[in-house]
Length: 159
Image 1 (tube, rainbow, N blue to C red):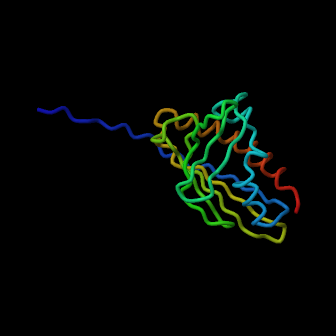
Image 2: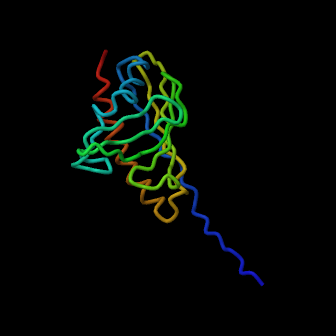
Image 3: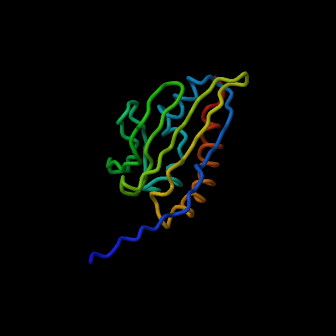
């Protein structure tokens, strides 16, 4: 008789959501986030290579790579672009420093407001991380607060 496979089901973790309003157009906010990510992303703090990381980029197309480049010119993948709809939204898989089969998804939406642009970030699909899901989500909660809520906002400035 074959042994039955017992599946361990992790508790569902809500997507992590962050929202900011920046004093610029949605077009500018989209360009800063996707086309100028290396100008505001704190690579020394949040990257695979840490002090050796020199650049990061998002290839502007579905299937495009999201990656960092170290001081030797070698790429470390962070994910792949899943949706590219400028200036309204884009989405990507997200697995910096991990194998692609552990990727979550990050979606960023841009909406015009009287104040400028409302930008919403959603980081989801934590279950793929199994036992590390809850701890990893907690780390990203504070990480996105800094990277998205402070660094990105400061980079948007005003047009």
